[in-house]
Image (cartoon, rainbow, N blue to C red; front, side, top):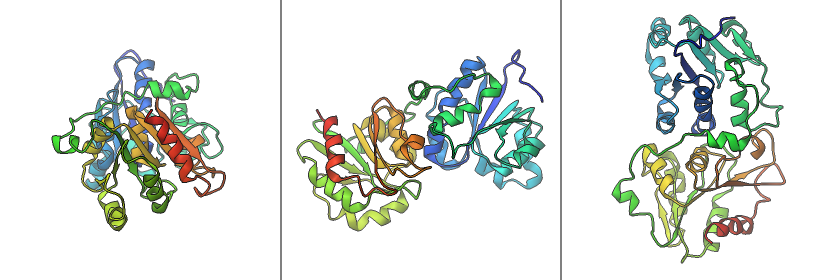
Length: 331
């Protein structure tokens, strides 16, 4: 098996071509690599829609767009990667297509898990890693893949948080900044999840908004453009201290908006993990059900927390429980 030549500056590619929350929980890997191999150049293979999140990580030096690779003729895809002069690829999110073109591109060290049969033919360093059976957090599981680069322990969640290297990349435009109140607690509620997390229900969110003091909270609803259509009738029923911003911000703007807000409430979805990484008050709502329980997917941040149901849905998490937690933020 080839090893990495630490006498030269290696170019290392982290491959994670799935969703925003998954990408956020992978970002600390870049900082750990730079500790293991000082001077290493770190690129991240991701999707177009996750690029703004990756750009917010100061430990990542470059972005390679998987969507652009897929648009190329099949015969040109490996050449595209070969031209990047990559020494190591780490398949954090298993992707059969990426694994094949990385091998065909002649990347010297190709790290993957033993759990994917195709990795046995496309990777030359296999790491034993079972995510479904593990009690470790997703971010810790990702870092196990750094064993071939010299990581000898599983970092604590506190250590993972310390390695985020997550910073805002754009200034918040004045029209968006004006939505945030200077004399109230700016609370973002992100009620939908694009299917990535179990949802609490719009009725519960409406009940929560009614429980929170209108004099203390400035409440902002966020969501994607698709989610705006699902939320449009619901937001019309909400009180006047609520501002609907669903579908009205780009992802870079949303990241900047979250950085400037005071707190965020959501289920296990991308904005939840962005808020935790940004260091604001963050509350995630999770079922006890594996593998989507908080032990695996809780938000990681200095001010993050979660509520876990006692059943395989969120029905046991009451409005009073959520309100009590959020009210502690505003003291």
